[in-house]
Amino acid sequence: MRVSVVICTKNRVQELVNCVKSVFAQSVSPHEVIIVDASDKDEAYLKIREEFPKDSRLKYIRSTHVSHITADRNVGVRNSSGDIILFLDDDTILDKDFIKEIVEIFEKDSEKGIGGVTGNIINIDEPKTVMRKLRVNLSLLMKRIFLLPTHGNGRFRSSGCPTFLYGAREKKDVESLSGCNMAYRKQVFNYLKFDEDFPELYIDDEDFSRRVSQRYRNVYTPNAKLIHRRSPVGSASPRVATPYTRTRRTVKSRYYLLKKNFPHTLKHTLAFWWSVVGMFGQAVMTMNLENVKGVISGVSEMKEIGSKLPKRNAP
Image (cartoon, rainbow, N blue to C red; front, top):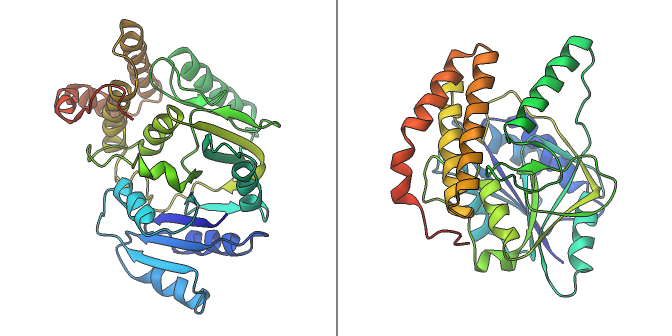
């Protein structure tokens, strides 16, 4: 099976180079690597051409979507020709057998019931000090109590927030795929695409994996290993400048995802608002005024989302 690797990037030159090097060092070579670059300057393009001057598998596309990684993912899909499309964050480093393990899952699925596969992020670090461990555990407890995104069984909560499966030793069916590494059959894109209808969508990867899980199986495999460095340099997702903007967009995006992908029942509505209380509480506890303002603004702007909602539960 041919694998098209899509990397959406912005202003991360060395991280991008390191990621591409790990892709080209795979024991099973990719069919092509498509870089969709929204950087402010040509530095990344020039560096990539310097590092990989003669590799015909490399496609470089300059993005016109400065603030919209969702559209760039769709650009990558339209320019791909593989049987599998593997999306990577630009600050990931793959184990040499990563692609091999991903392909193996799809090849063994003779009925083509598997739509997506995600791998095992192996650098989820344990806190090194007692105080840091206490803060991390308190944060995780709050996320579980308020039905917010956290580590878990890979399923979505009733609030619409996902849990992500990390470190499990066995292959498992999941709903949510990690946005930093998610592989889909090309045929999935005959029916679905990343949602560009809501310009401020921040969690497009969660939205897409939820919709795929309603048509296909999504699978986590522990054998496809990678490192996600979470670069502090300007991020491609979300491409926003301030904690206020990021928090405001998160609240609105989670409301959009819930209303679009889950039944409009009292259970889900109450669970969602409970999660908003949790987001507000976290912002207050950390004394981050920007995040507090972001939650309030996100809630006040929810009314504008109604007109952008597709038919309920439409994939």
